Amino acid sequence: MKRFLMTTALVMCCICVFANHQNRVVETSGRMPAWVYHTGNGYLSVSAEAATMNEAQDLCLAQIRRQVAESVAVKVMAQTTMHTAVTEDGAKSSRKVESEEEIRTKTANLPYIREISLAKAADTYWEHRYDKKTDVHSYMYAVRYPFSDFDLKKLIMDYESNESRLNSRIEELEAGVDSVASLEDIESALDEIFAIRSEFDDDDPRMTRLDVIANDYRRCYDNVDVQYKQVGLGRIVAVLVYKDKEIATKQKPQFKSKTAEIKGYKWDGDFLVIDFEDRGDAVSGERIIELRFRISGRYITKKLSYK
Figure 1 (cartoon, helix red, strand yellow):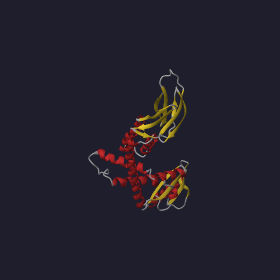
Figure 2: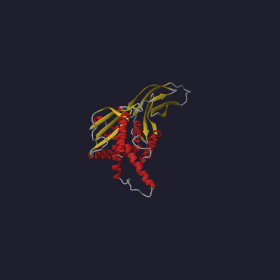
Figure 3: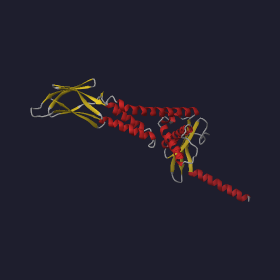
Figure 4: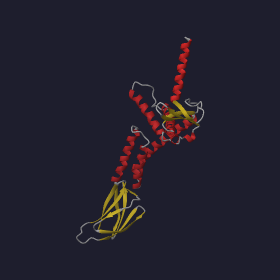
């Protein structure tokens, strides 16, 4: 029996030695710290193995960002009515999971998470490994990253502040449709709506609201008109009007006419002053100068008649 136990022990020892010989550490940054594979208070500890050191580092940073985002999501959900216990309504339970994922997505845009880097790590450790059986080299990288309760609370405040800012801006954009003061206001509003949409998941209910607001702004172009302020010999003074209100633009006007030669134009405040010379003859019929403004890939066109 003793001989059997001694033989078994010898075999196990040989197996261990063989295994270590098959997959061994070629190089290391030093003695493995106690925090590797163990998360302590005020810190996150993550590790990853990849074909290169840089790949392993990137995997570690991705893990840290995700863990931080998940921590925020869980806390925010715990503070809202959307966080429900398991209910008889499966849809409610499903919506809870979707909402946590939405929060993680939005949190990823916060400066704290975007700025997570190895330069801010409390400690790092790495190993260069070699598997003789497969002839494969790999790198294990571990990171200890500071993340305290204070950091978490600040992130939650930043998240809620950002959400409040976005909601307020959506309301302002919605109200601004009736107070457009220039063609550029329309273009700027559409650009901002596009930027805000990029911060939301597709199933965020605010996406539908933003789409409605965007369509309202696009329709603004259809409601822009050009009105005469003065028509005289060789001169037309016109102004852009939206919902009976004079508006401005920085766009360069374009002119087209078969009966007039445009000598020049200038802006006098919001008024467009066009100087021209009539080239029509007695049988030319109606004399027209076509005025166009191009903005956001579309034209606002008006035919200005003169005598």
